[in-house]
Amino acid sequence: MTLQDILTLDCTECAVPANSKKRILETLCQIAANKVGESDSSLLLESLLNREKMGSTGIGNGIAIPHGRLASTNKPVAVLLTTERAIDFDAIDNKPVDIFICLFVPQDSTQAHLETLQSIAKLFSERKTAKQVRKCTNKQTLFNLIQQN
Image 1 (cartoon, rainbow, N blue to C red):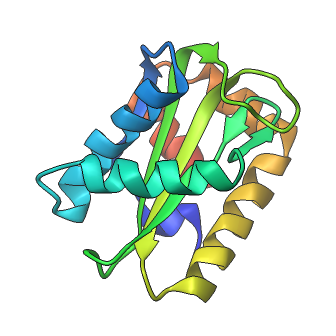
Image 2 (cartoon, rainbow, N blue to C red):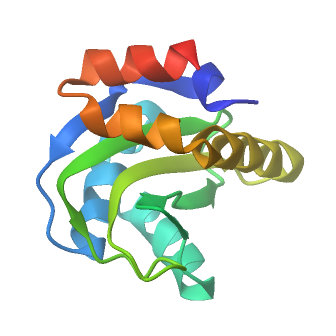
């Protein structure tokens, strides 16, 4: 499964204000909560924080792919957002992050989860993709860009 398969316009945001790792994770969870059907985004946040404890999901080059598994959903949900300014995210290259691709998958979808993470990493391994994403000024443009890649 690819990001294009699961990303929706209502889970895409541009130039979100954020000043900390925790705040950006909270924002990602608030956006995803509507799609997952969770009235309380704290379960989603707990899932992301548990994963971050194992090691940062900041993959370098200003990109992070926070992800978690949920027992309460039967379909994967992706959120893509950019921030106004890059924030410290403990990325592997120690550089701040301004592109976030968040993924929530059903608890028992291990293989699909890994394949989706791999396809996202591959998509963003192209430096031009990240460059184009950073130029987007609204969510529609950002969403369309991802759908065309």
